[in-house]
Image (cartoon, rainbow, N blue to C red; front, side, top):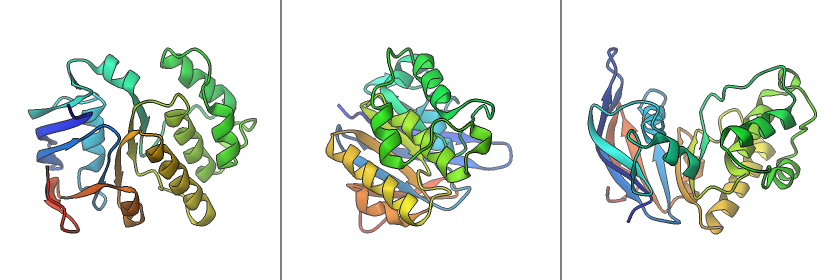
Length: 215
């Protein structure tokens, strides 16, 4: 059984954006990359998989559970990185991570300390004082620290360049080696090297990329 599955997934917004008839599956331990320009539908795809919005046609599932019918279960299985993380600017970084763990119903903070050190984040800073790249890395730590079996990462390199971007790519490579099932969405093709297979979205429509066969 696929860990992530989409079947004719369609969600169209009044302005004309969205996705149209997207189908794919991601097996356990596999990484699928979904690439496309801004507005191609990548974030809509992730939001459907998280159970935040309802498909108008088709459906999607995580670990066999329908994402819209069972969002609470789905979200316990997923480490989710949104493209634009919502954070409370008055919080210190460490307090945000502890809050996020409690929100997920977790006991303890898992790999928080290890990931903070690896990504060189200063958790004692209040979020309003953190540079944007550090905030992005903090949100990635929140997604990874409980070692969830599935990762849905929307634009994981957004706002990160040079050494900081390289740190994140190397961390995602380690997560792959640990057997996580991953869906990466990005406009940055440098992430393609991490992926077993790739699809592309153009105006919400899927197409093959790099000779890959859609599934």
